[in-house]
Length: 277
Image (cartoon, rainbow, N blue to C red; front, top):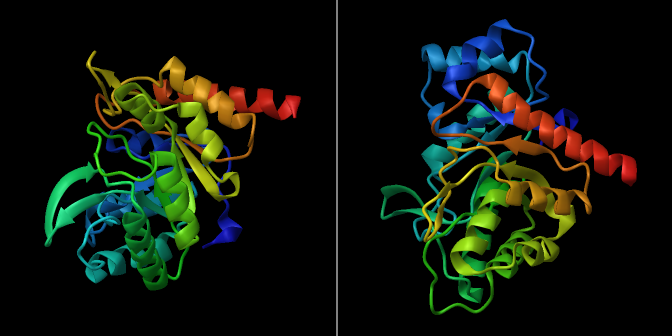
């Protein structure tokens, strides 16, 4: 991990509608998170823009295809491309989701939930160890939102995430929106979830918006960060005021100015807790 390129403050997820502005204007953003799977093909306008942006902003890399919980062995072609991109862009760290996304090489294009069992802990931890050995980097794993509950479970989600991170000796990307969505959908205790997390392993936080379907919340990333998620962020900041934070918006993407408003709100909350510490 390129520790000399540490990420600090509140960054934004890089999205194509904002590329021109980010390239041509002086925008107060300390770092960008790049969706890895959009930039693995060699050449082209997107790749050239990405390297031009890297001249202005430190970057992290966020994936959706590691399939950490899947039964297939790691995709060495995929992780070769990830490793090359990390090296070329001097990426600070790579993260992906604690879920599975493919079966026998067939991609679901979704983040599918796992059973919370000791067997699954050991399986996921070994997959992470294989990925880290291949990349020669410690990665971050992200908790996911879910819409079903698996009957044969042996622990709650927070205990599962913690156990996997400790078994694999990896870091955590804590998505507070996903934690709140699962509280609404399954009756989980979001604050207790945060209490269970090993703080020293949390290297990044995601803040995003959901879509309220009444019967359930959909992790759609198409709305502002909800007040309940801001409250969870404040609860986390009481424990750690320094964790890097990302504003994540993937659908119905607003103007860059609107995203900067949420970035500034996160900064203001962090400053309040820094002054009180």
